[in-house]
Picture (tube, rainbow, N blue to C red):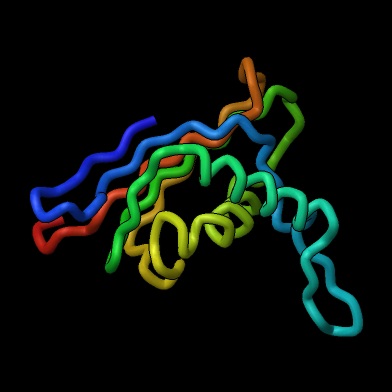
Length: 130
């Protein structure tokens, strides 16, 4: 896990691997009486993510970011990749970047049958020449 720091002390590019089973949006959120709530599994995921991110060196980027998310699963069950983005991104905002509205580029991959459940994250600032 790494991050780099610019000459003015601002932390920038972050690379990390978090050994946690990714959670889907379907498992994270529940609808009750037309109101969306975070499920108990969702609350546990957010709590574990906060704990992992607190113990992992990382940068914080103000302004536009590009994000790469690689999801790895030990099981070979079919999974919809897009269902895993929102819960993770919600867990990263105000920790790696200010808000998910600051994500200007998003690249995602999934790997099934991996050696361990994990999420690999790369978060970089977007520069004018990107």
